[in-house]
Image (cartoon, rainbow over all chains, first blue to last red; front, side, top):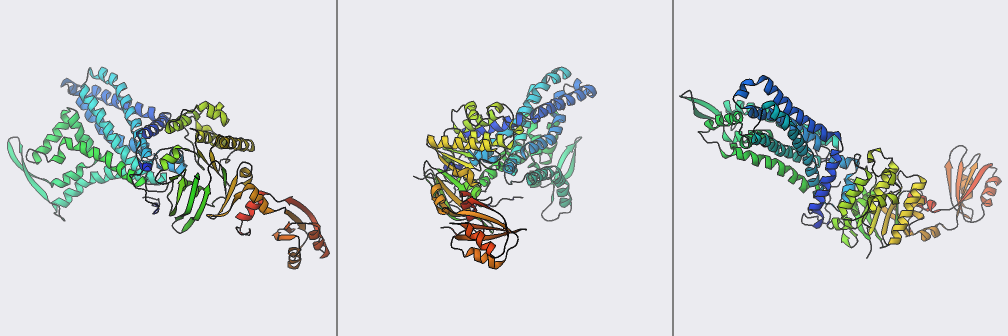
Length: 324
Length: 308
């Protein structure tokens, strides 16, 4: 994917040298500039309005069709459930679109030389960009959620603040993870075309490949191809013990590495949404009452943290070593 | 301590050699003109000086510091006008300058800086609507932030009209008087000869001449270039012209009718007489005093004289 030439042998630019250090002031200055750059465009307001419309739209639909749900007092639950189904798909798209040109675009137009003519390190630039772009997505989420809160409260006649803020917080973490992926990939090339292709690749990876993985694994397990196999477990259904089969533990680990999956599981922890918790309980039976640690809700935070830290860390390491 | 020391610098991209064993120094306080045709390796050299790219071998020191390991410190004391760069479309000139001032921890006034580069009236307009010349003025203003010890200006006249180019040279002079070292690249001799103390001429990644402006001027001598348009020409006549004692070099430019150019030290009538004696009709002729431009031409074209 990379079109760069690795820098030559040179005189050895170790990561401990002052030039490649991280300076908080520099990171802040770049993040601020990057945010200003984005806020000036329609993108920021467009996103805020989008999130507003999304929340109001879901709430409106719920209050129109969902009188039964409302009677049970579960409307915020439903709002979180339905909204998260949409944001799970949309937030990655937004983050990838916001981030794809972050570095590649500046290298293509040469404006990265403006940044790096000033006393910033390349690491400062990457982190500043990640912060700036994350801020655009996060602040527009906050603005959209805040504006919608009033309407949601009016339509639903009061709502669960914990669930609502939980969804917002989880969405921000999820957005930062995808922004990290986008900015990191953008730093690997000086062609925005290649960077764009990489973004499509990421989306396809998690939404087509990962979704197909479960079926693929099931197929392989049923036929016991290679090292794939099934595990038999029993669960209670209407007071009767039923035997069923599931995939091996490690397969579930792989399926759960998807940031979208982690987003969903994380939501069940930060919100009290019954509908999401119900799914989780069903899973517990498959593992004899207790989920392996990597399927527990807290682990999904680690997965999202992984997707925030690892892509940008790889980019920080590599971007220091290339010719611009 | 020299402001810039380039020592045996080589940079290759795969099979292509962009710079070959380049060495030169820029002294503190001087205005150094870094001259060469497009593609000679000027930007590559500047990119190594600023640590945008890494050398294949050799090393560069700026302000006494290693260009690679101490790049941040170097850039804190350096103002740069990069070449072939677009400004940020959605930011105004004021925001650009605030960013530079913020980044350098300086306390300059954006208005004063834009006044200097004659862009004050566009201070709150977004750079997306700027002409190339306005972008160039903005980037020059950004380079001036924080009264840098060293100014690196890569093709600063790009996109500027003659008036803008003159203003830019005026700023270079002011900065030099303040005590700054100016490293100034260009592919046009005219723009560097007026302001530079010394000039280095780069060709195909190698320094072919490096001297003071007056030194380079002396190297041309008092020669005159004579251009003669004739009705026809033959090898024998060309040979005869070349062998005239006052002629140092003669070239057939071709064309129809053919044109001969000759470097003449003394009488030009000898050339015209020689041609007419051979029955060749001189249709037109012109003379031109040798300029630094000719030095540049001779160093940077294939048929040029060898480096001294």
